[in-house]
Length: 377
Length: 256
Image (cartoon, rainbow over all chains, first blue to last red; front, top):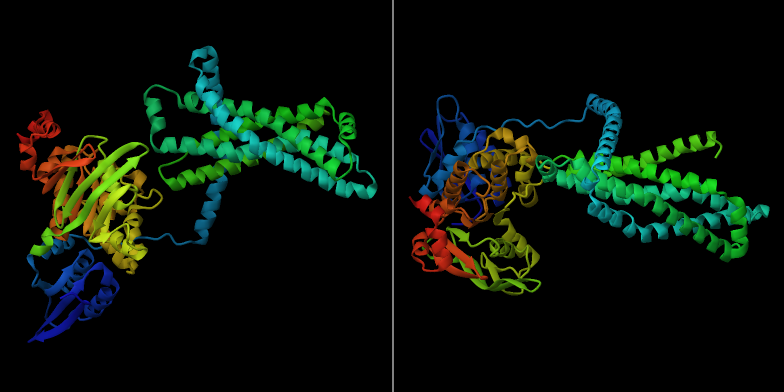
């Protein structure tokens, strides 16, 4: 009995029987749909049309629905099309689909120019929201640290140390490696171009100033925004999705105090340390290249470095680190707590945590540059 | 149909599953017959979900053989395996709906993958499936995060049924539902089994489900099936855990 499904037309006097045979299941759905569409054109051609399903060997929801769809389109006015020859084990399935109402038309959002303009408008209007959210979080973190200062026992030392390990200790190898390589590249490029003027030795000045003032801290901050900012957002976001943050709140804990403060503190402590290590690694790499590629021996390099840089350069660099850490931490935590229920939302917020983190780090760097220039450092 | 009833749809032979040094399943044998609703019980942590996941192929086993629809899943090739996967549906304990897709897209996901049918037919079938699991058509455009626990279970069932499978695995389908909702769900599983001719493999802790929905019950303990049979057999069993389970305080409340 198994075989391709068919829908045969058999005229019986002024009645027309549509005899369905074969397997009416999902695997044959495209063929079935075509047959049913053909047969639907018969609607109204005869006063009495009925569907005979006694020869159907196998029926599932797809087949049952297509028969029901055919029955509905053949039903015109008062003459209701009937289904005949329904076996007992399939009748409940057909009854089940008969109860389904006609499908509501599902609107698919077409892309229109006004829609795109609206999206842009909303995004621009949302910018001010971003800033308020950040300020809001900054305030909440400061308030929480105030509470912790008053009651030092509520400070979560274990958590802070744990995050310090994650953010600082485990980041050391990659940070040192990358800054070392950057130091090498700067020195190589410097020597290559300065050599034409016979000014090889000035590469030490450039390296020292650049690494200590800018590159060291900026590069490390950008890497930490990608490495730890994203981790913070993902952690907090998945906790939000699983209602863990709500659970904390109902137990009388402040999520800012329990989750955000230890993370912020770990980051604020970690970034200066990492920036320092990064700067040292970059100087070491630069020195190595200057020696091997530029022929500046280590003693001359150190002497020159001592003349070229002052403690000011170092302070300018290192002072920026905790501020940048705070910015990265606040952005990451705001984004993490803004995650909604879906995996997609978690991905979006993690992305925007990194993007916004890096953006604000660079903006802060610019602000610092103006500030230090105006106080003459 | 008579000879087919004797033919097991799932045949599990001597399977052993081990995590590290803990042996969760130890030479377990189980047959699930075509067209029956098998209730699978056992103490928490006995390995009920592990067995389900082993049969589906999510957990690898140390030894043994599993045949589903007469296909040995270890020696089958990719196309045979896909053929088997197309014929079963799985309802996970937490629903496991795709959170970034709407209910409608969730249900249509397997259809898109396995069938070449028009969007119109998919939409209509989706509505039919939603109606079958007792949900309103409006639910179709919602995201999983906007649904209640019971609705998630129902949508997950609708997705498991999307391709009209012959076999469905239900992992604690009624846990987390209110008693009325759980009762409805049992009724629903029964109706679907009648209308679609399903075979149902149901892991459950719900005594009501065992009484009202299941044809046969298998009990897992110490990594083996310690008993299998009708509810009457279970009640007559002298096994201490079974006695406690079926004659305990809660069991008496259900039976009275």
